[in-house]
Image 1 (tube, one colour):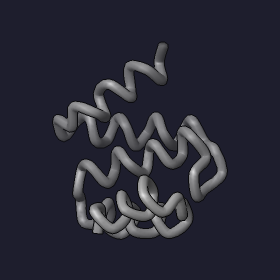
Image 2 (cartoon, one colour; image 1 turned 90 degrees about the vertical axis):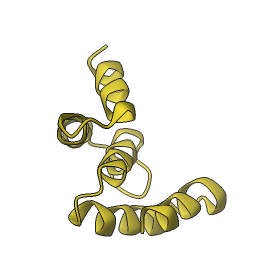
Image 3 (tube, helix red, strand yellow; image 1 turned 180 degrees about the vertical axis):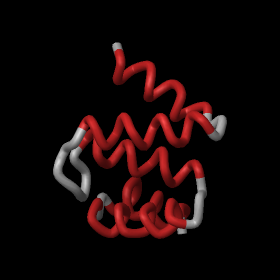
Image 4 (cartoon, one colour; image 1 turned 60 degrees about the vertical axis):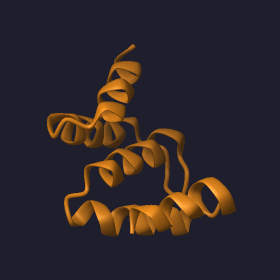
Amino acid sequence: MNALGSLFFNEKREYEQAFGWFSKAAERGYTRAITNLGICFELGCGVDRDWDKALQLYQESSKKGHVQAIYNLGYLYF
């Protein structure tokens, strides 16, 4: 599911579709998908921009050890 989201996000630039697939994967606890949802909220891709929600998602994923989430969290704090 996350791979489908990445395809829609990166290749097709269909952000609403990507957001939907990332959400489904995140519901199942996939940390990369949680981080990808954070990216969607941070950039406003497929959803209204919400830095507070992005921060929450990055924190959740970083607690599970996802390196990109840790980086994105630090960048958002910066």
